[in-house]
Length: 252
Ligand SMILES: [Zn+2]
Image 1 (cartoon, rainbow, N blue to C red):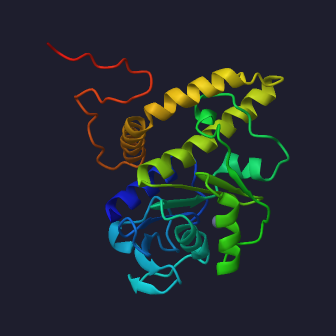
Image 2 (image 1 turned 135 degrees about the vertical axis):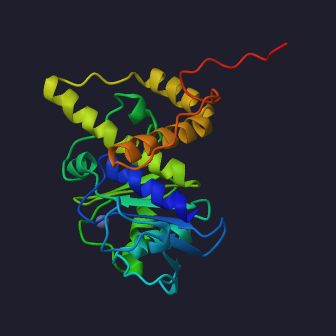
């Protein structure tokens, strides 16, 4: 599991979420646990290794690991406290999402990436660093039952029951906003009609599990290749549940 956290960090590093050594990913030690492993401070998302991670409890007490921790641990702890269903929290300062967080623009339904957020996201209306439990509770409250919260003039926190999904959401949200900024620079934005948004949301929802895994593994191979690390080979079998893939016919 710690290995998976560092893989998520490498994906985020290689896919537009890097901001110096800032940004952190955490995962519960196990579903239902009140302890979580988290990336330490002083090293970038692209540098962290499994042995570098620190184990904390929800009160911020260190259980294991020697490295110094980021000041923003209450983001993780208070989201885990409020949301038992969440097993992973990604907090990053992605460039395009941070630009959105500093603007008065509305998030537009314009692409397959944006459809992931058709049910909305939270908005934390403060630029102040989240360093106290009270501030962390404010972020968790702003997140509500969503899978992502925007922190004004700051960044995002993406959450879900798996490391793969929280990472996928963080990358997709930033990608959607990059596309929105580019589309707006070309002229008035052409939004996807609400009935098509609903249909795509339903279709993607039905295939989400398989698609997330496939995308995570792809993003990891790309990240490792870009970073000059040995990258895994693409799978030879055809995964199911992938959006755009035809349903597999039973063989007779
Ligand atoms: Zn931050």
